[in-house]
Amino acid sequence: GQSLEQPSEVTAVEGAIVQINCTYQTSGFYGLSWYQQHDGGAPTFLSYNALDGLEETGRFSSFLSRSDSYGYLLLQELQMKDSASYFCALRRNSGGYQKVTFGTGTKLQVIP
Amino acid sequence: GAVVSQHPSWVICKSGTSVKIECRSLDFQATTMFWYRQFPKQSLMLMATSNEGSKATYEQGVEKDKFLINHASLTLSTLTVTSAHPEDSSFYICSAHPGGRGTEAFFGQGTRLTVV
Figure (spheres, rainbow over the protein chains, first blue to last red):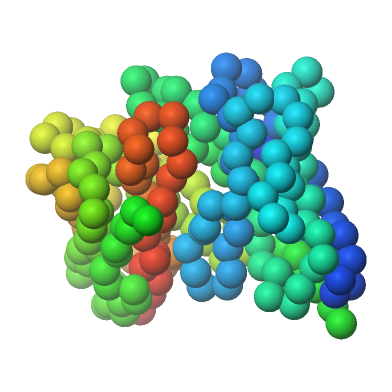
């Protein structure tokens, strides 16, 4: 099976940088995605790594190392509105369909 | 951008009744949609893959007779929770990939189901 592990909670100060890690146990996937979910809302797409290395999208960057089965999401210049849950997710082919498997999720709290 | 619309956003029903949740792709056609369930403070768990014109594919442990999925058109998939019980209370979310395989997922707004 597939499992993606994340720290359950992270607290960081407004304006700082925070890294959310994701380790996984699987192979044969398209890439690693990151989603943000505010309480009561639906997940929204943040970033995607198909290849190893760093992808930068504004204040958010994501990193993937397939050899280490590891990825992370980096949030810079933290804002209060960044307080939310963050999920890594693997895209893989299963039975002819593309499926998305979500990580355990990390609740980020940004404090003043 | 691509939009996936889900309705209703919340519903309260009595134990033993059935509830239907709709998921629509508003500006693209989706031959495949996905249904997830999320319990409080937990991750999203894939329940089933909805396929237009054919039977849904259910994940292990998901009762297909309890969670009926119908994907009658290229823009609409429905999830019906039959004979709902309090333990079915959860957040149900659908998703689709507007660009097809290998592209990013867009999610509906989610439906908060409370069974009393």
